[in-house]
Length: 413
Image (cartoon, rainbow, N blue to C red; front, side, top):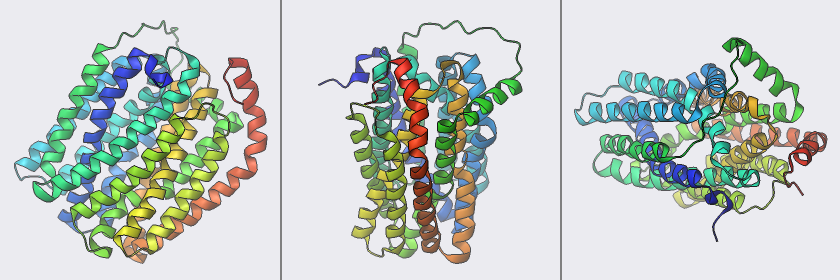
């Protein structure tokens, strides 16, 4: 049976192109952290590289959101994907010639961060334009999460094998070439040009309007703040996993790939669960439980010293992560006003991707001083506390959201 979102031709093209490209992106992410650790043997440098790749999202995403609300999101994405392809191919060229240094990685990671600051809000806000029926939007967002985490499963598994056998350069090269698929998909779409009202309002004023709207409405504010806490602490594991793979589990790049793939399996399971849901009812509770699952998974992973148990705990880490991100995204997309969608999604990008660099820097610095296991235990406890706080607010937030769904004819029961 065809999933509802796949009834839309443009969404099918988007899914195929992004699916192929994301596999390459996960290969590059794995190859980058492994290469940095091999070049420097420093947890702090893992944090620095993670910080530089994501920090532009914190400062520039609001501008990216305002840009997405004013200009064509379709054309914006074509441009960002071309630039991302150039970045990956530059990494590949440096690695293939044996001249790559940590400075190159930091500079190119920063460049990719600038691209993501405009790409992520535009991509998030573009999805509703691809869907022909409003009721299919929640399904499309869930499928996006499934696609993202299917790639998260496949990419690290392939990347780990390639790293062990031929090195990081070929991971970067495959990633660069994979962007061709998403660019072709974007060019093949039939997008109706939208008449965007002309406005003399300055970009700063538009950003201010977006902030006031988002933080003036309690449900949006609660989702953004919760996402920021989870991203700051709950995602630190991504830059600490190489330490576990080599120092604690005594493995190689293949073990790193298996650990990341295990989190991908859990995330894929979460994405499939969300994609098969027939209603958006109960997503608030899913967000709460997701943070709890992530927190417990991090604590269990931190104390494991055996690979099979570590793989099992990473399943729950991946599951909690994707349920948190995708459910928050779905709720935001279904309650936001259309003319502010890009700006609100830029704030979600800021809360999610924008907080990760601070978490990476904090996690890397703390890991050097107190060790990665203790850092992850602290992270897990904070995620659980955040879920408890949100659970107390859910009843009052639901009363504010239900009238919006009823007004828009969105099924919520």
